[in-house]
Length: 334
Image 1 (tube, rainbow, N blue to C red):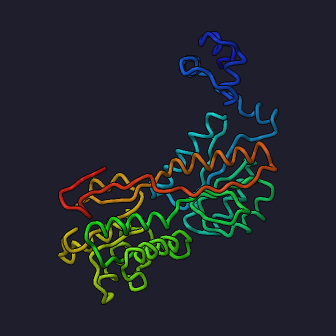
Image 2 (cartoon, one colour):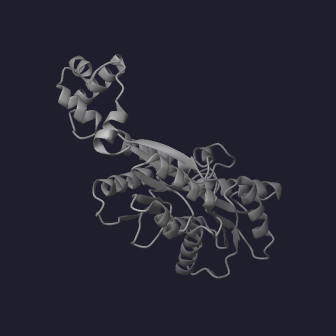
Image 3 (cartoon, rainbow, N blue to C red):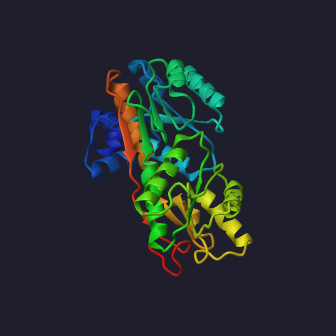
């Protein structure tokens, strides 16, 4: 196995410089960093994580709990976390809780057995329950808005919904229906609240706007769209909580023989890659999930470095809007 000295000789730098760079404790010029990376690859050097963990009293492991394995959002959060943590010498261990609070709590218990240095949680459990389980272990929440007793990174779902409703209004739609996620998630309620606030500001019937609740699946989105159409209230525009739900709504509209966007315009949220592939292509409020994972990891590192550090809260605004054919015929503006 190659030694640190061999890597240093290959890169033309000191042993201490290589050590600092690999442990994420020193910034160097990009050219030097590339030489060190190339030397590590050429020599096949592997960091002795166990030895370092024993020396520091840390595992260099971060537990990350996600609800399921089907959402692009969770993948992007993991990518953002790794982008922040790996240069600092930490490794991410993922657990999928399948939207089950008990499995989520079991994941926390498993991470405690692994002696992780902290946990990033994209979950649904009672935060007081998680704190009781985790004890002094640092925990940061993602996709949750909590009190200032907790650290979290979340989207401003009120603004997400407001942007979606405003766009539908600008497209000439005056009878907007809402399809939100399960109300067991706070984000779903915030989405509806934000949409109604925007409808009110636009002088439309906020309280009379039909609302359908559903799970985050294509099939559930289609069924929710059918309920809106059967509500007895006119609907010429739909703001959906996410793109998967919106795609299901489009399927249901096609099945009814309704034109999109002529009869009913549809807008989603997240700007998933498939938005460009479906027909018509789906307009969507953008979301930077990778940034959420990166910010949450930065908070966690600060909490690991200083157990007395204050809790931090971030509420991110949508980075933009991708306009496609589901709301504006023959006009595409990314």
